[in-house]
Length: 459
Image (cartoon, rainbow, N blue to C red):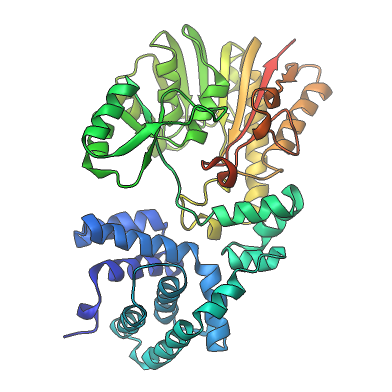
């Protein structure tokens, strides 16, 4: 029997996804879906493979620190398949439950052999067996989050991110946010139609589903939350257009926009169309929505969403949000859900933390500023502009709003804008850097970390 055939299918898939992510630059979610279809894994095996792959990708920072301590050498000196197997084995030994130590070690060694690195199998075996023996000490060391650099290792995050949150939000909030990045993301959906009927259908199928908590200030009436296993019933309702996957934080954006029947609304950077569908439902098919998206594939997704939900009055425009001012100031409401660094959604995107950098934020900030100015020019007098991102970054959030208001004051030809005080709507969610804006947080609100600002044209 070959080494590869002695590895459990779920673990083999997780190993392949891990290697594709860090060796080939693949997106973890895309690599996993393709691998699961290729191997035919489903049910429990697929769920186990996803848990191992996503967890090992998320915990790369912590695992690499442990590997370097145990092996006495930099991870950069290890052959890629050996490093991948160690990352997977360390994740199972230190962060996952349910796998016996001997199985985690033996399977990782078999992965090394199956990848053609048999010469390093003894080394991998020694590192992982030592990790199993010294697990309590390693866990205690990885629990240290007393400084930004220590927290980056403890919570497996880039050092620049830990330092940025430490500086912008303070020590306590930064620690809580970093820890939340490794917690399971919420399973939330929007009921496209009668919510109670959808809930009844799910419950009859054994799915534990409930309305979004009414005591949360921004809970959308369409939102539901699922606990535990989802099952095929949920997928069937999505395919039938009765449910749309959408976090409570995402749904809160449209709560703040507050679209009304009969209005003309612009949804900028709208792909894949989740919020467009929610806006259309709020307008009860009375009025018009123009959804703008530059990426052709995402524009096609908006059209597909509209078709799946049977929406009317939605026009999809494939265009650059920074260059559509020629449409004129005629919109009642404009939503700019801007491209951002996604730092509020790290729990649901396993590899996102390793793809971002301060340069990413600087580049995106330029795009956001240009799009915001175009969005303001689309408002008719008295119109409402909502700016949203799913990130937690002053340069992309509060600084953008300050820059926009400054532009309105410096340029006599620019629309006059007044910032609504959303902090009075939800004081507990107010941004510490600009209390008139809201900053949702995964650790506190258990949903995507959206930033929200609402402005009115008042000239």
